[in-house]
Length: 452
Image (cartoon, rainbow, N blue to C red; front, side):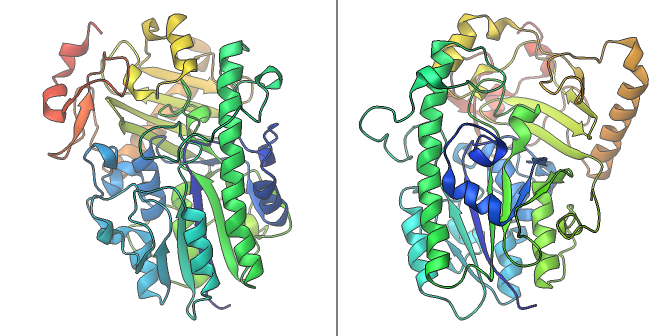
Protein backbone atom coordinates (compact mmCIF):
# COMPACT_ATOMS: atom_id res chain seq x y z
CA UNK A 1 0.00 0.00 0.00
CA UNK A 2 1.18 3.50 -0.80
CA UNK A 3 1.99 5.69 2.14
CA UNK A 4 -1.23 7.43 3.24
CA UNK A 5 -1.58 11.11 3.87
CA UNK A 6 -2.11 11.84 7.56
CA UNK A 7 -4.14 14.63 9.16
CA UNK A 8 -3.62 14.92 12.91
CA UNK A 9 -6.49 17.14 14.02
CA UNK A 10 -6.80 17.91 17.71
CA UNK A 11 -8.55 20.04 20.26
CA UNK A 12 -7.97 21.44 23.74
CA UNK A 13 -9.73 20.09 26.85
CA UNK A 14 -12.49 18.05 25.18
CA UNK A 15 -12.24 14.63 26.82
CA UNK A 16 -14.97 12.46 25.33
CA UNK A 17 -17.68 15.11 25.50
CA UNK A 18 -18.74 15.00 21.85
CA UNK A 19 -21.74 13.48 20.12
CA UNK A 20 -20.28 10.08 19.08
CA UNK A 21 -19.68 9.21 22.74
CA UNK A 22 -23.38 9.51 23.51
CA UNK A 23 -23.58 13.07 24.82
CA UNK A 24 -26.29 15.55 23.87
CA UNK A 25 -23.67 17.77 22.26
CA UNK A 26 -24.29 18.53 18.58
CA UNK A 27 -21.01 17.83 16.76
CA UNK A 28 -22.28 16.47 13.43
CA UNK A 29 -18.95 16.57 11.59
CA UNK A 30 -17.21 14.56 14.32
CA UNK A 31 -20.21 12.21 14.37
CA UNK A 32 -19.92 11.66 10.61
CA UNK A 33 -16.21 10.94 10.99
CA UNK A 34 -17.02 8.27 13.57
CA UNK A 35 -19.70 6.70 11.39
CA UNK A 36 -17.22 6.45 8.51
CA UNK A 37 -14.16 5.46 10.57
CA UNK A 38 -13.31 3.80 13.87
CA UNK A 39 -14.36 5.05 17.31
CA UNK A 40 -12.16 4.05 20.25
CA UNK A 41 -14.30 3.96 23.41
CA UNK A 42 -11.41 3.39 25.81
CA UNK A 43 -8.66 5.72 24.62
CA UNK A 44 -6.53 7.56 27.17
CA UNK A 45 -3.91 10.28 27.20
CA UNK A 46 -0.57 9.68 28.92
CA UNK A 47 -0.77 12.85 31.01
CA UNK A 48 -3.91 14.98 31.59
CA UNK A 49 -2.05 18.30 31.22
CA UNK A 50 -1.58 20.13 27.93
CA UNK A 51 2.09 20.04 26.86
CA UNK A 52 3.05 16.68 28.41
CA UNK A 53 0.03 15.01 26.82
CA UNK A 54 0.87 16.32 23.35
CA UNK A 55 4.56 15.54 23.72
CA UNK A 56 3.76 11.96 24.72
CA UNK A 57 1.50 11.46 21.68
CA UNK A 58 3.98 13.01 19.24
CA UNK A 59 7.00 11.08 20.56
CA UNK A 60 5.28 7.79 21.32
CA UNK A 61 6.65 7.88 24.87
CA UNK A 62 5.37 8.32 28.39
CA UNK A 63 5.66 11.93 29.54
CA UNK A 64 8.50 11.35 32.00
CA UNK A 65 10.34 9.25 29.41
CA UNK A 66 10.32 11.98 26.78
CA UNK A 67 11.19 14.48 29.53
CA UNK A 68 8.20 16.82 29.16
CA UNK A 69 7.36 17.59 32.78
CA UNK A 70 5.30 20.76 32.47
CA UNK A 71 3.76 23.43 30.25
CA UNK A 72 5.55 25.04 27.30
CA UNK A 73 4.02 28.40 28.20
CA UNK A 74 5.55 28.10 31.69
CA UNK A 75 9.12 27.38 30.65
CA UNK A 76 9.25 23.71 29.67
CA UNK A 77 10.42 22.46 26.29
CA UNK A 78 10.81 18.92 24.96
CA UNK A 79 14.46 17.99 25.66
CA UNK A 80 14.93 15.86 22.51
CA UNK A 81 12.72 17.40 19.80
CA UNK A 82 14.22 15.08 17.17
CA UNK A 83 11.94 12.39 18.63
CA UNK A 84 8.82 14.25 17.47
CA UNK A 85 7.03 12.36 14.70
CA UNK A 86 7.60 14.97 11.94
CA UNK A 87 11.33 14.22 12.01
CA UNK A 88 10.71 10.51 11.40
CA UNK A 89 8.15 11.20 8.66
CA UNK A 90 10.48 13.67 6.94
CA UNK A 91 13.05 10.90 6.56
CA UNK A 92 10.34 8.62 5.13
CA UNK A 93 9.51 11.04 2.31
CA UNK A 94 6.59 12.89 3.83
CA UNK A 95 5.86 16.58 3.51
CA UNK A 96 5.11 17.75 7.04
CA UNK A 97 3.12 20.90 7.78
CA UNK A 98 1.87 22.75 10.86
CA UNK A 99 -1.40 24.62 10.35
CA UNK A 100 -2.47 25.13 13.96
CA UNK A 101 -0.53 25.66 17.14
CA UNK A 102 2.14 23.61 18.85
CA UNK A 103 2.64 23.34 22.59
CA UNK A 104 5.78 21.27 23.11
CA UNK A 105 8.92 23.30 22.25
CA UNK A 106 10.08 26.88 22.70
CA UNK A 107 11.60 27.20 19.20
CA UNK A 108 9.11 26.25 16.51
CA UNK A 109 11.92 25.18 14.17
CA UNK A 110 12.61 22.27 16.55
CA UNK A 111 9.25 20.69 15.71
CA UNK A 112 10.65 19.43 12.40
CA UNK A 113 7.76 20.61 10.25
CA UNK A 114 8.92 21.50 6.74
CA UNK A 115 6.01 23.87 6.20
CA UNK A 116 5.23 26.29 9.02
CA UNK A 117 1.81 27.64 8.08
CA UNK A 118 1.33 29.13 11.54
CA UNK A 119 3.80 30.53 14.03
CA UNK A 120 2.69 27.79 16.40
CA UNK A 121 1.04 30.05 18.95
CA UNK A 122 -1.91 31.56 17.05
CA UNK A 123 -4.91 29.29 17.19
CA UNK A 124 -7.34 31.34 15.06
CA UNK A 125 -7.62 30.41 11.41
CA UNK A 126 -6.07 26.93 11.62
CA UNK A 127 -8.88 25.43 9.55
CA UNK A 128 -8.36 27.91 6.70
CA UNK A 129 -4.61 27.34 6.62
CA UNK A 130 -5.26 23.61 6.56
CA UNK A 131 -7.79 23.97 3.74
CA UNK A 132 -5.34 25.99 1.64
CA UNK A 133 -2.59 23.41 2.16
CA UNK A 134 -4.89 20.51 1.22
CA UNK A 135 -5.95 22.37 -1.94
CA UNK A 136 -2.32 22.33 -3.09
CA UNK A 137 -2.56 18.52 -3.41
CA UNK A 138 1.11 17.89 -2.61
CA UNK A 139 2.86 15.35 -4.84
CA UNK A 140 4.35 13.53 -1.85
CA UNK A 141 2.38 12.02 1.05
CA UNK A 142 1.80 14.62 3.74
CA UNK A 143 1.42 14.87 7.51
CA UNK A 144 -0.73 17.87 8.42
CA UNK A 145 -1.00 18.99 12.06
CA UNK A 146 -4.18 21.00 12.72
CA UNK A 147 -4.50 22.14 16.33
CA UNK A 148 -7.45 24.19 17.63
CA UNK A 149 -7.86 26.32 20.76
CA UNK A 150 -11.37 25.04 21.36
CA UNK A 151 -12.64 23.79 23.75
CA UNK A 152 -10.18 25.49 26.11
CA UNK A 153 -11.66 28.12 28.38
CA UNK A 154 -11.30 31.59 26.91
CA UNK A 155 -8.14 33.44 27.79
CA UNK A 156 -5.42 35.54 26.18
CA UNK A 157 -4.21 34.01 22.93
CA UNK A 158 -7.41 32.13 22.16
CA UNK A 159 -10.12 33.05 19.70
CA UNK A 160 -12.38 35.81 21.04
CA UNK A 161 -15.69 34.81 22.59
CA UNK A 162 -18.36 34.96 19.87
CA UNK A 163 -20.79 37.82 20.31
CA UNK A 164 -24.41 37.21 21.18
CA UNK A 165 -26.26 34.89 23.51
CA UNK A 166 -25.55 31.23 24.01
CA UNK A 167 -26.91 28.91 21.34
CA UNK A 168 -27.26 26.26 24.01
CA UNK A 169 -30.04 26.82 26.55
CA UNK A 170 -28.61 26.06 30.03
CA UNK A 171 -32.05 25.03 31.28
CA UNK A 172 -31.85 21.79 29.29
CA UNK A 173 -28.22 20.86 29.81
CA UNK A 174 -26.78 18.02 31.88
CA UNK A 175 -23.53 18.96 33.71
CA UNK A 176 -20.42 16.77 33.34
CA UNK A 177 -20.48 13.48 35.21
CA UNK A 178 -18.62 14.53 38.41
CA UNK A 179 -20.91 17.49 39.16
CA UNK A 180 -24.24 18.14 40.84
CA UNK A 181 -27.06 19.49 38.71
CA UNK A 182 -27.18 23.20 39.57
CA UNK A 183 -27.80 26.42 37.61
CA UNK A 184 -24.06 27.18 37.80
CA UNK A 185 -22.87 23.84 36.45
CA UNK A 186 -25.56 23.86 33.75
CA UNK A 187 -24.50 27.33 32.64
CA UNK A 188 -20.85 26.30 32.53
CA UNK A 189 -21.64 23.19 30.50
CA UNK A 190 -23.79 25.20 28.08
CA UNK A 191 -20.78 27.41 27.39
CA UNK A 192 -18.66 24.31 26.79
CA UNK A 193 -21.25 22.95 24.35
CA UNK A 194 -21.13 26.18 22.37
CA UNK A 195 -17.36 25.87 22.19
CA UNK A 196 -17.71 22.26 21.02
CA UNK A 197 -20.07 23.46 18.27
CA UNK A 198 -17.38 25.87 17.10
CA UNK A 199 -14.75 23.14 17.20
CA UNK A 200 -16.95 20.85 15.12
CA UNK A 201 -17.57 23.57 12.53
CA UNK A 202 -13.85 24.21 12.15
CA UNK A 203 -13.02 20.51 11.90
CA UNK A 204 -15.71 20.22 9.25
CA UNK A 205 -13.84 22.73 7.07
CA UNK A 206 -10.82 20.41 7.06
CA UNK A 207 -12.86 17.24 6.45
CA UNK A 208 -14.70 18.94 3.56
CA UNK A 209 -11.39 20.07 2.03
CA UNK A 210 -10.22 16.47 1.85
CA UNK A 211 -13.42 15.47 0.06
CA UNK A 212 -13.40 18.44 -2.32
CA UNK A 213 -9.83 17.72 -3.40
CA UNK A 214 -10.27 13.98 -3.80
CA UNK A 215 -7.90 13.11 -0.97
CA UNK A 216 -10.27 11.58 1.59
CA UNK A 217 -9.81 7.95 0.53
CA UNK A 218 -6.02 7.98 0.94
CA UNK A 219 -5.86 10.20 4.03
CA UNK A 220 -5.79 8.89 7.57
CA UNK A 221 -7.59 11.37 9.82
CA UNK A 222 -6.70 11.15 13.52
CA UNK A 223 -9.17 13.18 15.58
CA UNK A 224 -8.38 13.49 19.27
CA UNK A 225 -7.82 15.87 22.19
CA UNK A 226 -5.20 16.35 24.87
CA UNK A 227 -7.23 15.41 27.99
CA UNK A 228 -10.47 15.95 29.89
CA UNK A 229 -12.61 19.05 30.29
CA UNK A 230 -11.23 22.13 32.06
CA UNK A 231 -13.59 21.58 34.99
CA UNK A 232 -12.69 20.78 38.62
CA UNK A 233 -11.54 17.18 39.19
CA UNK A 234 -11.25 16.52 35.44
CA UNK A 235 -8.29 18.13 33.62
CA UNK A 236 -5.06 17.54 35.61
CA UNK A 237 -6.60 14.54 37.38
CA UNK A 238 -5.92 10.84 36.81
CA UNK A 239 -9.50 9.63 36.99
CA UNK A 240 -11.10 8.74 33.65
CA UNK A 241 -12.66 12.22 33.74
CA UNK A 242 -9.14 13.57 33.22
CA UNK A 243 -7.34 10.96 31.12
CA UNK A 244 -10.23 9.68 28.98
CA UNK A 245 -10.07 11.19 25.48
CA UNK A 246 -11.95 11.02 22.23
CA UNK A 247 -10.09 9.12 19.53
CA UNK A 248 -11.66 8.71 16.11
CA UNK A 249 -9.61 7.50 13.16
CA UNK A 250 -10.78 7.27 9.54
CA UNK A 251 -8.90 6.20 6.44
CA UNK A 252 -6.95 3.40 4.76
CA UNK A 253 -5.66 0.35 6.56
CA UNK A 254 -9.01 -0.77 7.96
CA UNK A 255 -10.07 2.46 9.67
CA UNK A 256 -13.52 2.46 8.14
CA UNK A 257 -17.04 1.16 8.41
CA UNK A 258 -18.21 2.80 11.62
CA UNK A 259 -16.42 0.31 13.85
CA UNK A 260 -16.41 0.67 17.63
CA UNK A 261 -13.36 -0.62 19.50
CA UNK A 262 -13.54 -1.26 23.26
CA UNK A 263 -9.94 -2.34 23.82
CA UNK A 264 -7.67 -0.15 25.94
CA UNK A 265 -5.61 2.29 23.87
CA UNK A 266 -3.07 4.95 24.86
CA UNK A 267 -2.23 7.94 22.72
CA UNK A 268 1.40 6.80 22.75
CA UNK A 269 0.19 3.92 20.54
CA UNK A 270 -0.49 6.27 17.61
CA UNK A 271 3.14 6.81 16.54
CA UNK A 272 3.90 3.06 16.21
CA UNK A 273 0.56 2.58 14.45
CA UNK A 274 1.51 5.14 11.81
CA UNK A 275 4.87 3.44 11.32
CA UNK A 276 3.09 0.09 10.93
CA UNK A 277 0.56 1.48 8.47
CA UNK A 278 3.07 3.39 6.34
CA UNK A 279 5.74 0.70 6.35
CA UNK A 280 8.25 2.83 8.25
CA UNK A 281 10.79 1.32 10.60
CA UNK A 282 9.72 2.18 14.16
CA UNK A 283 12.27 4.35 16.01
CA UNK A 284 13.88 2.62 19.00
CA UNK A 285 12.48 5.04 21.59
CA UNK A 286 8.82 4.17 20.98
CA UNK A 287 7.03 2.76 24.03
CA UNK A 288 3.58 2.26 22.53
CA UNK A 289 2.19 -0.57 20.43
CA UNK A 290 0.40 -0.60 17.09
CA UNK A 291 -3.38 -0.70 17.30
CA UNK A 292 -3.83 -2.18 13.82
CA UNK A 293 -4.64 -5.66 15.24
CA UNK A 294 -7.64 -4.11 17.05
CA UNK A 295 -8.90 -2.42 13.90
CA UNK A 296 -8.44 -5.45 11.68
CA UNK A 297 -10.18 -7.79 14.09
CA UNK A 298 -7.02 -9.79 14.77
CA UNK A 299 -7.16 -9.14 18.53
CA UNK A 300 -9.61 -7.92 21.15
CA UNK A 301 -6.85 -6.07 22.97
CA UNK A 302 -3.26 -4.99 22.37
CA UNK A 303 -2.58 -4.00 25.99
CA UNK A 304 -4.08 -5.10 29.30
CA UNK A 305 -3.35 -1.80 31.04
CA UNK A 306 -2.69 1.86 30.36
CA UNK A 307 -0.57 4.17 32.49
CA UNK A 308 -0.78 7.90 33.12
CA UNK A 309 0.94 10.53 35.21
CA UNK A 310 0.87 14.11 36.45
CA UNK A 311 3.96 16.17 37.26
CA UNK A 312 3.77 19.93 36.80
CA UNK A 313 0.88 22.02 35.61
CA UNK A 314 0.65 25.31 37.44
CA UNK A 315 1.92 23.55 40.58
CA UNK A 316 3.80 20.34 41.29
CA UNK A 317 1.46 17.41 42.08
CA UNK A 318 3.36 14.20 41.23
CA UNK A 319 0.97 11.29 40.67
CA UNK A 320 0.96 8.02 38.73
CA UNK A 321 -1.84 5.66 37.69
CA UNK A 322 -2.45 2.26 36.18
CA UNK A 323 -5.82 1.33 34.72
CA UNK A 324 -7.00 -2.09 33.56
CA UNK A 325 -10.48 -3.03 32.37
CA UNK A 326 -11.48 -3.76 35.97
CA UNK A 327 -9.27 -1.67 38.27
CA UNK A 328 -7.74 1.80 38.60
CA UNK A 329 -4.91 2.53 41.04
CA UNK A 330 -3.63 6.08 41.61
CA UNK A 331 -0.58 6.88 43.74
CA UNK A 332 0.45 10.34 44.95
CA UNK A 333 4.14 11.08 45.57
CA UNK A 334 4.18 14.19 47.73
CA UNK A 335 3.01 15.01 51.22
CA UNK A 336 0.47 17.68 50.28
CA UNK A 337 -2.75 17.30 52.24
CA UNK A 338 -4.88 19.52 50.00
CA UNK A 339 -5.49 19.74 46.27
CA UNK A 340 -3.56 22.52 44.52
CA UNK A 341 -6.23 24.94 43.32
CA UNK A 342 -4.05 26.64 40.64
CA UNK A 343 -3.99 23.32 38.77
CA UNK A 344 -7.66 23.90 37.97
CA UNK A 345 -8.60 26.57 35.42
CA UNK A 346 -10.76 29.35 36.82
CA UNK A 347 -14.47 29.02 36.09
CA UNK A 348 -17.89 29.48 37.65
CA UNK A 349 -17.90 25.74 38.39
CA UNK A 350 -14.58 26.04 40.22
CA UNK A 351 -15.89 28.94 42.29
CA UNK A 352 -19.01 26.92 43.12
CA UNK A 353 -16.98 23.87 44.16
CA UNK A 354 -14.64 25.93 46.32
CA UNK A 355 -17.63 27.53 48.02
CA UNK A 356 -18.80 23.99 48.87
CA UNK A 357 -15.45 23.18 50.49
CA UNK A 358 -13.46 21.53 47.69
CA UNK A 359 -10.27 23.25 48.78
CA UNK A 360 -10.51 21.72 52.26
CA UNK A 361 -10.88 18.13 51.06
CA UNK A 362 -7.98 15.87 52.01
CA UNK A 363 -5.82 14.22 49.38
CA UNK A 364 -5.10 10.48 49.61
CA UNK A 365 -1.77 8.79 48.91
CA UNK A 366 -3.32 5.58 47.57
CA UNK A 367 -6.57 5.26 45.63
CA UNK A 368 -8.08 2.06 44.28
CA UNK A 369 -11.30 1.95 42.27
CA UNK A 370 -13.42 -0.87 40.90
CA UNK A 371 -14.19 0.34 37.36
CA UNK A 372 -17.13 -2.07 37.00
CA UNK A 373 -19.06 -1.25 40.17
CA UNK A 374 -17.70 2.28 40.61
CA UNK A 375 -17.08 3.76 37.18
CA UNK A 376 -17.38 7.28 38.63
CA UNK A 377 -14.32 6.56 40.84
CA UNK A 378 -16.00 7.83 44.00
CA UNK A 379 -15.40 4.96 46.44
CA UNK A 380 -11.73 4.52 47.34
CA UNK A 381 -11.11 0.86 48.21
CA UNK A 382 -7.43 1.26 49.12
CA UNK A 383 -8.17 1.05 52.85
CA UNK A 384 -10.58 -1.87 52.59
CA UNK A 385 -8.93 -5.16 53.72
CA UNK A 386 -11.13 -7.13 51.35
CA UNK A 387 -9.24 -5.60 48.41
CA UNK A 388 -5.73 -5.88 49.83
CA UNK A 389 -4.61 -8.46 47.24
CA UNK A 390 -5.83 -6.25 44.39
CA UNK A 391 -4.10 -3.20 45.88
CA UNK A 392 -0.80 -5.08 46.22
CA UNK A 393 -0.98 -6.38 42.65
CA UNK A 394 -1.84 -2.99 41.13
CA UNK A 395 0.81 -1.20 43.16
CA UNK A 396 3.37 -3.81 42.14
CA UNK A 397 2.50 -3.38 38.46
CA UNK A 398 2.72 0.39 38.73
CA UNK A 399 6.10 0.18 40.47
CA UNK A 400 7.37 -2.21 37.79
CA UNK A 401 6.33 0.21 35.04
CA UNK A 402 8.02 3.08 36.82
CA UNK A 403 11.23 1.10 37.20
CA UNK A 404 11.15 -0.09 33.60
CA UNK A 405 10.68 3.45 32.29
CA UNK A 406 13.19 5.07 34.68
CA UNK A 407 10.62 7.29 36.32
CA UNK A 408 12.54 10.09 38.09
CA UNK A 409 9.87 10.43 40.79
CA UNK A 410 10.81 7.44 42.88
CA UNK A 411 9.73 8.35 46.41
CA UNK A 412 7.98 11.02 48.42
CA UNK A 413 9.76 14.34 48.34
CA UNK A 414 11.91 13.64 45.28
CA UNK A 415 11.32 16.27 42.64
CA UNK A 416 11.20 15.90 38.88
CA UNK A 417 13.78 18.22 37.37
CA UNK A 418 12.63 21.64 36.18
CA UNK A 419 14.17 23.81 33.45
CA UNK A 420 15.81 27.05 34.47
CA UNK A 421 13.04 29.14 32.93
CA UNK A 422 10.19 27.26 34.64
CA UNK A 423 7.66 29.22 36.68
CA UNK A 424 5.01 27.90 39.06
CA UNK A 425 2.23 29.08 41.31
CA UNK A 426 2.41 28.47 45.02
CA UNK A 427 0.36 25.30 45.70
CA UNK A 428 -1.73 27.06 48.36
CA UNK A 429 -2.75 29.85 45.96
CA UNK A 430 -6.25 29.85 44.46
CA UNK A 431 -5.82 30.62 40.77
CA UNK A 432 -3.41 29.94 37.91
CA UNK A 433 -3.60 33.69 37.36
CA UNK A 434 -2.03 34.41 40.76
CA UNK A 435 1.61 35.45 41.00
CA UNK A 436 4.12 33.03 39.50
CA UNK A 437 7.53 32.28 40.95
CA UNK A 438 10.70 30.63 39.61
CA UNK A 439 10.32 26.91 40.18
CA UNK A 440 13.32 26.68 42.50
CA UNK A 441 11.67 29.20 44.82
CA UNK A 442 8.47 27.15 45.02
CA UNK A 443 9.80 23.61 45.31
CA UNK A 444 10.70 23.51 48.98
CA UNK A 445 11.39 20.17 50.68
CA UNK A 446 8.15 18.24 51.06
CA UNK A 447 8.16 18.69 54.83
CA UNK A 448 7.38 22.38 54.29
CA UNK A 449 4.06 21.37 52.74
CA UNK A 450 2.84 19.06 55.49
CA UNK A 451 0.48 21.58 57.04
CA UNK A 452 -1.17 22.47 53.76
